[in-house]
Amino acid sequence: SRAGRLSVVASAILVSSAAGANEDLMRVAKRIFEPIPSAAPAVRDNPITHEKVTLGKSLFFDSRLSASGVISCNTCHNLGTGGVDAGPRSIGHRWQLGSRRAPTVYNAVFNVAQFWDGRAADLKAQAAGPVQASVEMNATPDHVLKTLNSMTDYVVMFSKAFPNEVAPVTFENFAKAIEAFEATLITPAAPFDQYLEGDEYALSDQQKTGLKLFIEKGCSSCHNGINVGGQDYFRFGVVKRPAEGLLPKEDKGRFAVTKDLGDEYVFRSAPLRNVALRPPYFHSGQVWSLKQAVGVMSEVQLGAKLSDEETDEIVAFLNSLTGQLPKIEYPILPTRTIATPKPSL
Ligand code: HEM
Ligand code: HEM
Image (cartoon, rainbow, N blue to C red; front, side):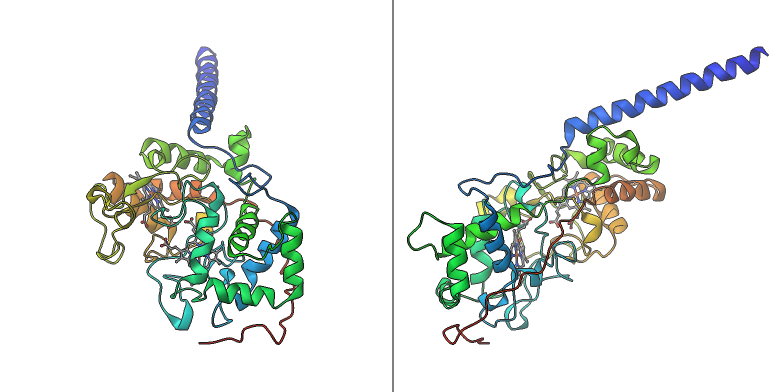
């Protein structure tokens, strides 16, 4: 019948325009975001070699570099739990409570600068900080170097990692080796990466709707690029000030770095790669569900009221940002000698 034929034509048009809309969405997404590469990226002034990465990995897991002998980088950036600790804020030397939530080390190499306020330019500059910070590892460069020099295996590893240097066991090389290891902590091949590489079926319909909302509602104006964030700084509370618990008054964010009044309560837009793996959220670590975090963002950054369904769709999209974590074999560390500094609390 004519009506039958018409409805076939109508549904054919619907199908083709849905396909068109899908192509448009992919094209738009490709302009805003970028897939994670499958190999470690190059870092400035620090060629990545296998030997450097092997050394950096041992250093990352070695708690003897802390004053107490208890804390390693992995204590707060646990590679088994999304590169973060249990939260809300990190606990460091002598049970001291840090002031912020630990950000993940996975894909940190892609961030424009390090820390919630971007105060370290890159991972080498960053790595020098926590060992010395009294609330974190409470060590001194001297303690680190004494510890490393006390174990021949470490000295050999440094010579292999920095083959052209006469005295390679330096604090700078310690930071470079850690940076090299961290550059390998990338998580490619998330469903979203597969989608950006052209696989229309890598995302579910709900995730595609979520992606569309993420772009149309304005989330992607701050969370974009390779890390879906981590590229720029914005006030936390553009439209409305978040609750005191989420944005404690005393932490003024980027203001501490630039001393510019316009930077009060400005933070780096959080990188959202693997975000589903690492609650609690925000620099204060007070929000334990991703759904609630999305609700906070839409309210305080955009002044938008999302329906329950829309919030679920965005959360579904955020789940598509979970990539393949590298396989990490726990390193067997050099054995301490009588010259190795003893733990001190
Ligand atoms: C920030 C690596 C030790 C807690 C960071 C960042 C990196 C990193 C790369 C910045 C990530 C980003 O901004 O996206 C390391 C390494 C360590 C180490 C290589 C060992 C040498 C620790 C320890 C703790 C800790 C032991 C906890 C006691 C934190 C916290 C931040 C942070 C709270 C955020 C600080 C802020 O934004 O002000 N770390 N970390 N880290 N790390 Fe670590
Ligand atoms: C943090 C999602 C819109 C800037 C976050 C976090 C999530 C998120 C889940 C927490 C990540 C973590 O703790 O690791 C979203 C969604 C948005 C949106 C779904 C749209 C509904 C925006 C907009 C801006 C922005 C429009 C900029 C104007 C930031 C900043 C942070 C953040 C600065 C870090 C806040 C802090 O200091 O803790 N976002 N976001 N976001 N986002 Fe958004």
